[in-house]
Image 1 (cartoon, helix red, strand yellow):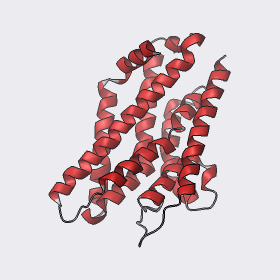
Image 2 (cartoon, rainbow, N blue to C red):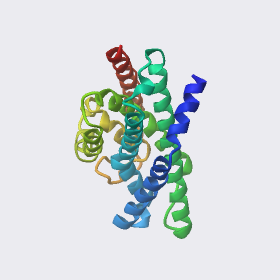
Image 3 (cartoon, rainbow, N blue to C red):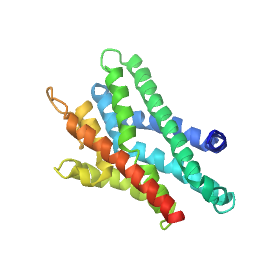
Length: 238
């Protein structure tokens, strides 16, 4: 497993992937700054991150990997059944680490902006870091699903669908009592209960007690879906 992790690391350290990890958090904050005032910069940046750019990042990382395997000889690197599952787990782990790095960069960019507006942009670093970390757990399911569906659906269609569902459909479903049926809503539930950001992007006024149950359900379902689709992928390739 150690050698497989090293092998996958060589693939994921490409310039295009690192560029996406750095650029997307910067673009997120820039859009939030242009479309809102500095007073709500943190919450609006988180909204755009959960609504669009987190799924865009993960979809692009998946797309880069898909194309690199295709160029290497139509997935000959993962055709050996003995190592297939370990290779896919390694890919997902490295992508999650890159997504974690992007989350850290997002915090750093917000901090840098707060230095420009010291009395306007206020950051609770502990809560912000916790929110971004929980969001990663909440979208953990997405990578196994992308790999599973890529056997039948074009990766470009998956990228577009992934982002559009998260941006246009999920906010509406996330405001209902049936949010749990659509996995793209899970990160919205985290944002709502930790940072008090509505799925619409508005900030909840007043102090609201976080619904811990919903947070646990969102992360729990994400983990279950990750395991289930990883199993389906392994079973389908046997």
